[in-house]
Image 1: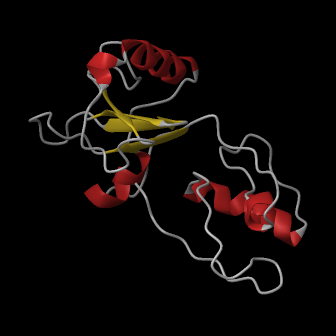
Image 2: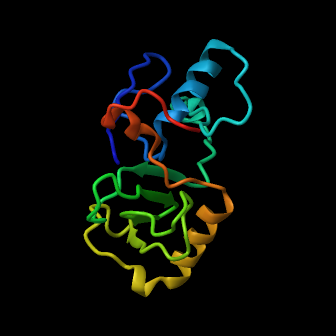
Length: 162
C-alpha cells in the first residue's frame, strides 16, 4: 500500500525533502481544492496535505482504511478484505468473516508494527491482543464496509451499489 510520491514545487518545497506523512489518494481533492481556493465539500474522507507540503504542522489521519477483493477465502468472488493503519500499527483482514458487509469482531486480523517491521514480515497479533481489540472497536464504530468499491472495475461491473 505504499506508493512513493514526488512533488516539485520550486520556492515552496526544498529539493530533497522527505516526508513520512501517511496519506491516501482521497487527500488529493481537498489538497488541490485548497490550492485553488475552492470551498471543500463537507463529509469527505480526505484532508488537505497542503500544510505538509509547506513544511508546516500537519494533522494526521486518525486512521487509514483500505479494501480489496478477498484473499485466502477459497471462494471465487468471496468476501473482500481490508486493512486499517493507525499510528505505528497496520492490521490486515484477508477477508471479512461476517455474513454482512461489515467488519466483525470475528475477523481474523493480522497485526504489524510498522515502526519496527516496515516490511510486514512478523505478525504480532497474538502478542498485542489489546491493539487488535482497539482496532476492531475502531472499524466497528465507524460504520465501515468490507465491500471493495474499486473492485467493480476489476470485475467488469459498470455500477457499484453505495
